[in-house]
Image 1 (cartoon, rainbow, N blue to C red):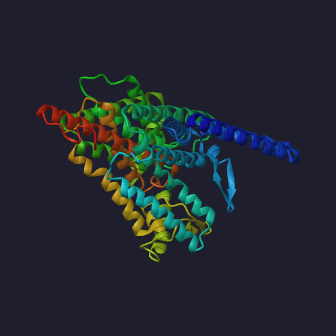
Image 2 (cartoon, rainbow, N blue to C red; image 1 turned 90 degrees about the vertical axis):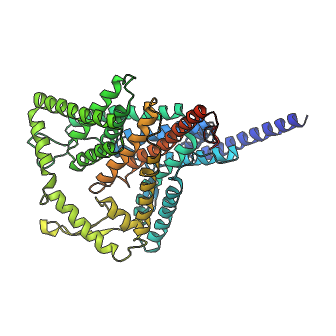
Amino acid sequence: MSGEATSRQDDRRFWILVAAVEVVVLLAAFRSPLVAAALAGGVGVLALLSLLVGTRRGTLLIGGFLIVVTIVLPEDLALQYRLPVAGGGIFIVDFLLALLLASVVVFVLVQGRLQMVKSPLGLPMLLLLGWVVVAALIGYQRGNELKLILQDARSLSYYALFFFAVILVTDRRTILSFLRLLAVCVPVVFALGVIFAAQGQGMAVDYVEAGVSRFPAPDDVFLMSSAMVASFLVVWASSRRRPRWLWSLLVISLLGLVLSFVRGNWVAFVASLFYLLLVLRVRERMRLVAGVLVLACLLTAGMAIVRPALLRSVVSRALAVTAVQDRNVQWRLIENKAVGQQIKQSPLLGNGLGKDYLFDWSRYGVAPYYKTYIHNDYYWFVHRLGIVGLGLFLWLAIAYLVPWMRYRQTLPRDDPWLVGLVYGGRAMFVALLVNSVTSPRLSAKLSVTVLALVMGMSEVALGLLRQRSAAEAALAAGTPTEEASGSG
């Protein structure tokens, strides 16, 4: 009887709420039909979200949608709609992140306990996000422009996707779903680049022949996917056939990487391959070397046949990687000098988020002006977050790249997706670490979104593989262990 009374009481509250909403919409209609329509639409959206927020399936759907929007949606469209705040605005796409994090919190509260895959990255990631808040307060206290503070904070906040992964993307099936989602985004981004190139939106660069321009697509997508897909193919068990679409994805990724004409990307990709050579097994190293040589020959032959001017431009651009007098290199050196002067003023805590600096380009006939963009991400971290902030990020990097090495020789190799994620996630991270000397990858929304998600998933994959390894060892020894039972 008490259950029926509670149910009737809940129904009564629901209908009272519905009636109240209807009254509010009706009153708004007397003032403005447009406001009433917007209010009714907003209520409908909230009603739909109530079915998703706080549930595991709903939170995963929101996370997947956020990933697709962040990677695929062209930046000019992503930044077109915003809510005005402090002279700037909060972009609509960022509300997806807020909605996702709110859904994760509600999910944890509903569960009544925090179930999260254990990882050495958890503490440094949490402290780094906390220090971002401190840096924002430092910037505000020092009079930095609020819209610039929000601009700096928005990209760094996407590191919180790591916790989304280790809380909710905790089984093999879900991991594979997100890997497929990431894989689908790559050819879509490439196709959009082809469309933009056909419209003449390619950007001119130095050290290339006439008529050759930079591929108008996010080049960091192809850098990250090249490192990841190469890792999957290399660690793939010889007894299992590699999917053909994986080879196609690698070709698309490498083609986008080459056509970006970003020399830092090329150096970073080579660095990721060297990292793989260090951590792979002997047979896998031989497979990597042979694969690189074959693909390099195929790409070179393809460009020589289809468009020789493109091949000559790639060679010319690659040889210019040490051209110190290049205008772009000089641009970065001037940036580093100006930023370094401000770093000396507050090296430990930094100047806070939103800090600008005077960029003196007068030697090239351009009047000095204030800017916030810094190509070297390590200078950016120290400039905004101080040595403390950079130290927290280096702690995070070490926690990701070092402790797992103790288990790499004992990981089961018959699950190429999980093993490839463990190796590929770290190869991708190494590529971004190197690339961030000349391009801000560690503080840019797109690359941070993918990096944080992949870091979390690779930690989950490592945990699943370790559990399997421990279970198999315990079974062979006839003594079940705590880790093998899954209690860890």
